[in-house]
Length: 512
Image (cartoon, rainbow, N blue to C red; front, top):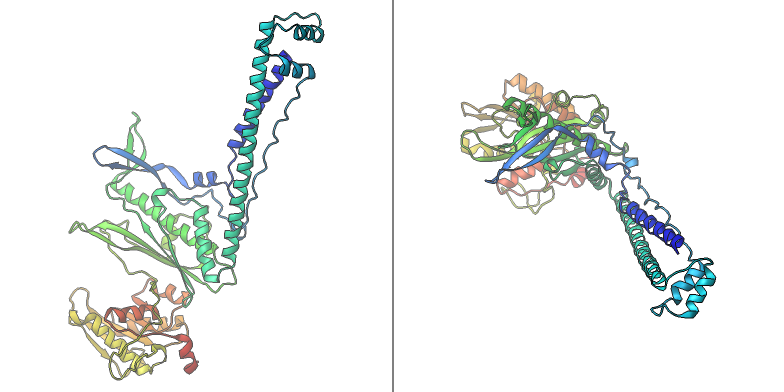
């Protein structure tokens, strides 16, 4: 009895150990170690301490800095599914010796039964058990076996449930990835970016909603996201000798925030570059960062684009994230930013996109010369130039600006000149209109820049019914040039109640 009891106690302990092992098994179908990624994505010395309400409670959140130790997956590995884990083998249940099994079954409250006493004497030579002792031993053994078998059944059911759960996770992930691979190319790029962003975790404080757009006309991916406000937040950079928090000075805080912002931008650009296959006709990536701030002059809450950047995919894929400095990288890519400045203002993005995409809309007459349902991409180029000039008259009429169409525009590369009389922001603007059915080449942007210099103008504005390539945006991003594509032209016209449409495919039949 004692030896068998010991065997079952050992089996009970083995079951408990098994139960503990399977409770710690966590299944993630993504092919990475998330804990290591999260750890490497966080810099412990920088945390945000935000005092909440009157309770003076605080939330400490790590700031994201570009991780030097994380190797981002490529797209092939991202779509690899880790199979469900294997589980340890359930301990084998011990056998009950026949004589003890008989004892276990036969012994009852009538422990003075002479037949049982006689059996015990025969089964255990030279042993003398008092009936009460036998009864207690048997009761303990009986409860031990019953409890152990009950735990065994419970653990087996839990194991089956866990295996089924992990199998469902695997199948769901497999179906999710198959759906993405069956999407159209532009939709697949967006879905793949979200997969990358989900895989490489950000601290919750910075995990804002990313908007991704594939602008096929310009062969550009545009990502926009909100960068949180750091007003009334202090950044902990260490502790004093008395173990009290040491906070960053205003200058230190500005530098840390700037580095965090640039790290996020480079991360976003790099992950979006990884989302594009080599055979896809996408050449550039643009990022616009939204931000809210309080105007120092009025105290009012303002919101706008506070950082913007554009770069070719080839540039981004060549970056070595383990060695670069995010600030130097952002400057080298000629990004624009006002967040780190004392006075934050909204800037004009390097690349803009009309997300409503109103290239095909219900139309209405603007004037008798323009027919109903006019496709701007197929109208006469003279009419298009006058329409563009009229648009800028509507845009600047309240400021007293004057717009003139230059009849010699075909020779000098100027279709219209805008004179803004405002003594501060005014001046001379040259406007060029391209009624195109193909992407505007970078040479047209270079020509406009030369015209701006020759005319002594403040800015050049190039408007087209089509779009621009990455080279055009790259050339214009640090020059006094604004590029307005077809969707943005329609959006400007709609602000003045003028609804037209642009149908490139239809126009190409007349202007191949």
